[in-house]
Length: 485
Ligand code: UDX
Image 1 (tube, helix red, strand yellow):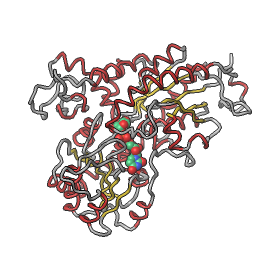
Image 2 (image 1 turned 180 degrees about the vertical axis):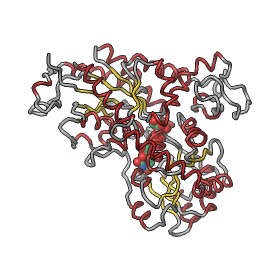
Image 3 (image 1 turned 90 degrees about the horizontal axis):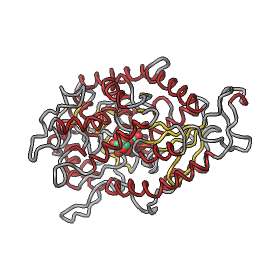
Image 4 (image 1 turned 120 degrees about the vertical axis):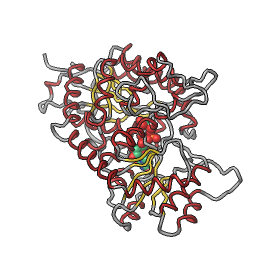
């Protein structure tokens, strides 16, 4: 019997960091001949202008409401609101949409002579045969399951962070959790397999830290439950490479029905040039500014799409960067720096100009980060160690200096500083002297640069033809085709 046309509905959590790896994933599937519907929130699709630009005959965009007003900043302070709103509004819309996408007919693949699946002559896509849902949307797994569609979970964060959540019950058993009140965050943590020799309390994802009446952050049990929930899906997909996280992947495998490590996807399948991926407007004048700088002379500073810093933290960073003496390019989103407590009305941009002097610093609201990281002038990356940013720096062999903000960033930065040794981890410290010293070290250490370059070579082997990620992706495409038949 001929196989049905495979049509995958890819549904990321509607935030920049999730879109940035799930869109290359969708591109990869479309490139392998599978039809893909990529599901945005209405808010994001408007910001990206995707509705008007179908990038390929096998990839299209649809959207559903996220339930928040358009002027909601959807930044870290409002993350819980977004999670709750999605659970109520988007889950109902997702159910209705999926039901409607299941009611279309599905032609057999034998009808298409090139072996690839294709839309109708009028551009209509056949019935959805498989859902790939962000693991951060556990209800989407249930909806797909209830409607009888095979579903896979996709995690946009590191495998090591997911293993930490899967290990949480064991950490409670061992009395590692909750952390003792006033306890030393530098104490080692037992119970996360494969990480006992280097993991300290402070390196666990931020929700493991003491909070609330009994010392357990109320978000932790929810995040642990959501992580285990991915075990209901037919498989769990990671945007990572085996050579980066082999041990974590092996320890996750027994908890899941199957595990695929298919990254770093941005380097394997960049979204088509015609498709906007940034929710903010990329200011590419910074690339022209970099063109005028010497090789490996610039510190690139970016704390991702969600982090917000206090005015005091901003001032410490600025003073440290200026004292380190290297030119720097700093991404400051409009909502990124809190107000000064002493009523100082100077904007962060003006403060940088005044402190650094002409030509020594360049500020943008949003940069074309991948172009920046591959620019010959960039010497190191002062980053929050979000997983996309980490992978982007790894692929380009750029030394990292990490100041993790929240979520998986705390454990990612430990891997940078203590496992891969392609950078330094400045976690929990924000003092100008430390910033100055660590910026100098990240810029000048031959050892760190060599590790960063070796790591880049290693990951490039993973993604090249025949490499582990490329092979895993082939296995995943066959798996999806099988589920779709
Ligand atoms: C957070 C988490 O830390 C991350 O691990 C999780 O998987 C998703 O949510 P975020 O703050 O968005 O992520 O950071 P990161 O994962 O690094 O993603 C930010 C993305 O925005 C990167 O792909 C980066 O290239 C891009 N970016 C950032 C730009 O394109 N321009 C900029 O100026 C800044």
